Length: 110
Length: 112
Image (cartoon, rainbow over all chains, first blue to last red; front, top):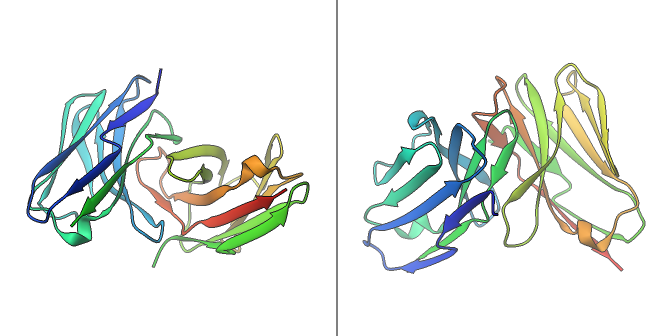
């Protein structure tokens, strides 16, 4: 009965590859997010969707493309992976000001 | 630089002691929130304090907010080993939680 679940938990890949991370929430929330946490634990918002519509895009490279097929799902596709993309990516959802986070996807680009 | 910055960066205490973490921010806010992150896990919401509130309690947690100084503190009383985690403040400038800006975090270690 996980509230916000994301897969995979670990992702190890070569530079230049394309990869996707999936996220699903069963909380009935309208808003979903992608956050990136770097090696210093700094957490920064990447995207926010409200009821399948993009509402925040925080100067993220075009190689990152979120997709929300319905309000319970928000996936993140990354093209042409670079070393600097290595980080932990968190999906989250909210209905008010409080965010509920998934357990993260640790992406390592070699 | 970040909107929120926590102080100290790391804190080590004995079980039963109190732990205090501080957060400073730069611009006016609608609310400020504290989250906990256990190692290898996602963030968990702890408490939210609105800009018109000065103090809030939840169990062993006490949060204060001083909007004139643009600062907040999180006090954990009678700490336990299970409180070992990183603690982040997050500021919400407009309300609604759509764009929280997180601080740099305080790594708390509670030793037996």
